[in-house]
Image (cartoon, rainbow, N blue to C red; front, top):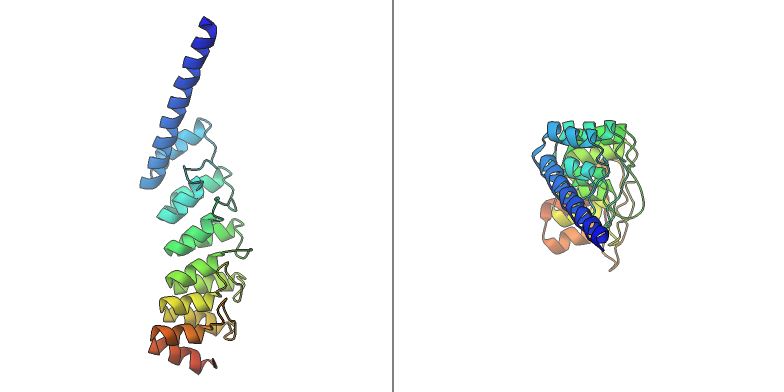
Length: 209
């Protein structure tokens, strides 16, 4: 009985210490503290450690724009294609946040540019990050891939009124005729939004509805 109680106390203490270490590690990631992150990795912390919602250390560093940490984690064998429970990858979060240089690093280290479901190009187009859109297209992103909501990257750019991102997609001949779940095209989306500039851009590219 005494031994069992002692074992339980040691287990709880170890769990508490582990939780505190994880919390400190995540805080160091958030502020971009490479020294502290490196120290925890030296002590054996898994570079693919996740936070409470399943986002990996690499995802968090990429989203926050800490290129040095991204490089460090990759060097320590972090999985560049690890996915969160929601399907996000480090490259997707970098694309969502407009982190072009981090996206370059991730792709150079093997991050997948195209895959099923939401993809980096969808996120970049949705937020209007035109440079990232151009980069991802140059690296082989599927310009006409449909997101789970039925939208193409061009449709997502139209929804947000992101003319530069739309132009980048049109430059690569993105399909103007793709229709969403309700039959809407990029042109119809722009028309319904009252976005005259986007309507003109799409019509000049040959869109009809």
